[in-house]
Length: 225
Image 1 (cartoon, rainbow, N blue to C red):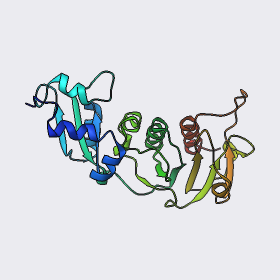
Image 2 (cartoon, rainbow, N blue to C red):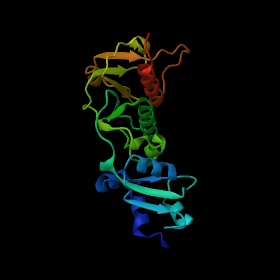
Image 3 (cartoon, rainbow, N blue to C red):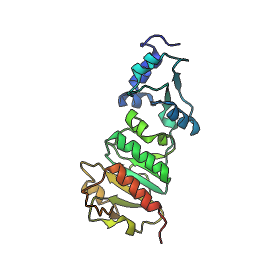
Image 4 (cartoon, rainbow, N blue to C red):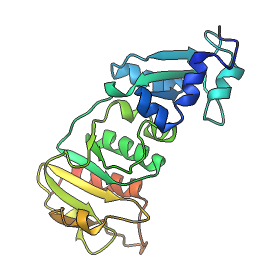
């Protein structure tokens, strides 16, 4: 039983809150039994697991937790064991820096059988907030670099694009989404074959990027007449 907050296993979990340490060590931490089970179900073997009452006291685990209500379990996984590669439908994220949005888009991709491609400047999908927002989808959705997936590149823009329900997208599609603040820069738009927009009959100015990505995936998956 761990009895000191200076224990090396606890110190490692503290370090993994910092992207620099995640990059250096190739590890990331997950909090809670559901996320641990998601990793195990995906076939990953944790590098370490700390369980309250078995390995560590509740107070000491709470000390390293990033949650308001600390979990009973914290596990450490290896980054290089996460799924990589592409799928016929991909969400390509350009400098989406909010970790909650990146995690939510992973969850949406998981629901619709899509992959996720990340540019430089995107939030780390293995950071604590992104991991929580993904609800375990991080362990199931293949991730690749922004330029890796093939297929028709479709820029999702707030307005003046082809209405998404009218888009004839083909079998291999890369939906390109930018950050809410800056959108997609001209050089990225020029590399896309099409521009599409989500109709908003209510008159809203824009959608949250995670919501827009989920709606776009649903629309592509919806049976067409």
